[in-house]
Image (cartoon, rainbow, N blue to C red):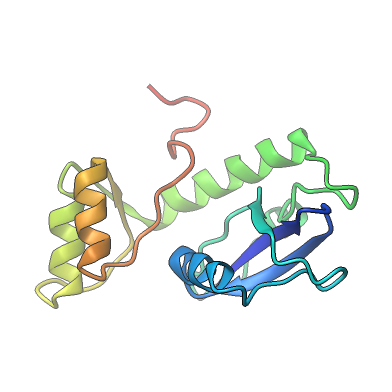
Length: 151
């Protein structure tokens, strides 16, 4: 499950739980997602601190910076940067870098040719879209896991 920070057109913040980004978009587009305060169906995703579920409980530091959105809807940039650093470290420590072989590795795991494991790498837009069309679930990271030392 993915927990999104959402807000309506009146800026009322709330959370929504979805199985995938496509699930959120599908439900929103069909008018199934609405603001619990004013019932507006004009909903958009807001910035949130991502979390990868590895089966282990999150660290205290990750829990401490889980949300960089304050109650007034403003972004706490210090918490956001800290959350991004925690997330990047978590990804680096819990995945294998496969570089340009990302699509091949993801397909091999999806079709049962290789054992499932956490991987990260690179794929261009067309390749990423082809993976999605095949039903292969993955997430594009909003920043390099080398953040802030990206090349």
